[in-house]
Structures are given as C-alpha cells and as structure tokens.
Length: 153
Length: 148
Image 1 (cartoon, rainbow over the protein chains, first blue to last red):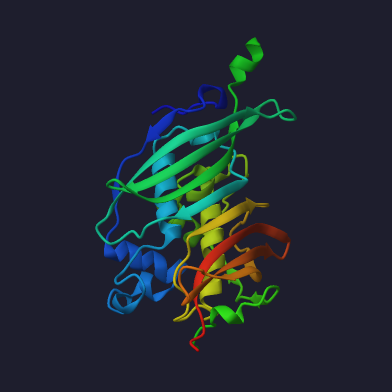
Image 2 (cartoon, rainbow over the protein chains, first blue to last red):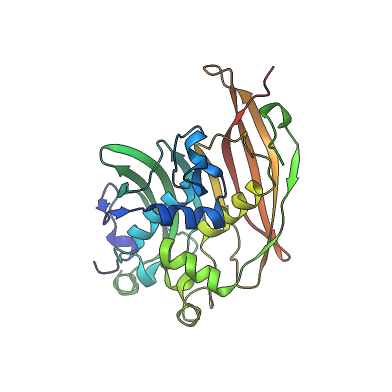
C-alpha cells in the first residue's frame, strides 16, 4: 500500500495485517534477551509453570503486531515517531505455532494546532489467534500532513 | 535467588536494575523484526529522517527495562505473568551508546479476591540515560502470596 498523510486516514477505518506464525525458537530467542522468565525461555521448565508450557513474551506479541502494521507501508516516511502507547492488555497466551492476525482501527485523527505540518493519529490494535483475542493496545503517532493540500488550502 | 512474595511488594518499595548500553546492532536487530521504520533499522537511512540518526524502537526500550527488572530475580518462581502495561510515554530518543538505567517503584498492591493464592502488583517504571528521562510506564504483574 502507498504511504498516507494524516489527512488521508479516516476515523473508524480498519486495516488487516498479514498473519505471522511464531515458532518455539523465535519465542525463546526474544525472551532470552528481553523477558527471561521460565515460561518464555525454557520449553521443559515451562511445563510446571502456571501456563503449563512455553508462551511468547507479551512484548514480542505487541512488537510483531506493530511490525506487521508498519509493513503495510502506510506510515513509511510520513511517521515522525510516537510519543505514547496505552492500555496494553494480554488476554490469552500465545504458544509456539500460533498464527497472529492483527486488525488495526483508526480511533483518532487530529491535526496539530502548534505544528501545521503534522498531526496525531491514534490506532487501536487487536491481535488474535483464530477467534481468540490475545492482545490489544493503542498507539499514538505523529504523522506528516500533505504539504500540497496545505498549500492549496 | 528465589523471588519475592506478593507480601514483599510494599507500596513505595524501590528496585534499581543493572544498566544496559544499547549498541547499533542490537537496535537494528530488534527493529527489523518488531518495528521496521527507517529511523530504527539502518544507521545510514536514519540520517535523513526527522531524528537525524538511528534511535531505538520504543518497544525495545520498554522490553529492556522490564527485562532488567526480571533479572533482579524479584519474580523468580513467584511471578505468574502480567496482564498489561499502561501509560507508556516515550519522552526522549535513545541512541546507540546510550546506557539505560531503570528504576521500579511499587505503586499499588492488592490481594486477588477470587484466588487467595495470588495478588496483583502495579509497578511504576522510570527509564533514563545520563542525559535524563527517556521513558515511563506502569506494568501490572500477578504474584504468588506467601504460603501460610
């Protein structure tokens, strides 16, 4: 998809990302660096944990979801970075072999009052394995406005 | 070491974690998989972006800081996972060579009514470099209660 300027996003619009399957090695590699808890790093030790087996770090799940949205190419060079993320919820475990599918809904589009070249977009992410939601979170990103549209206005 | 029980997480208790220095390779390794934007994935292309150079993904900053808290051992054998994070604020960019210091304070602790074996603790994270604060957020974790 081509990159979009702030003004080209519409509140309520939904984007569906490409599915991703997480393997055991992906889960363990990530967790050894960033979330070294036995239920994320050790398939055998995880069996006697509260989860009864290996599960992915929630940080990895939200990273995968966000990356799949970025790979749609909608933000590309128009993104000016993000100041915030809110209401991250991990509602069900992600296990090796699970395929993650993410829907992204535009919940707010707001031009900046102080910086006419940009605005804020807020997105609601929902990631599921089959019919079961496993994670949700909201992101806030600064996005460029269309410089040509501005000149015409 | 063995971890702390729910009862050990008194409101206001603070934990200091080991500092971590982020280098280019780790920033780009993370970003290529989890946040593939030009200012995170490649030092050269990052020069032409609004940040004027490579910066770490905010997801990476958050994951490193919670990872360093895990490495204190406070949750070893007593942590039962976490349902979420709130109010993540990325205040300033993290660049290659920056050293992240994470401090964690217990903001809230309450027993779980439906399960006498566990409680819920909310931890306030503050991540800084030598130049100042770079990120803040809260994390919620489930913890085992001390057996009677």
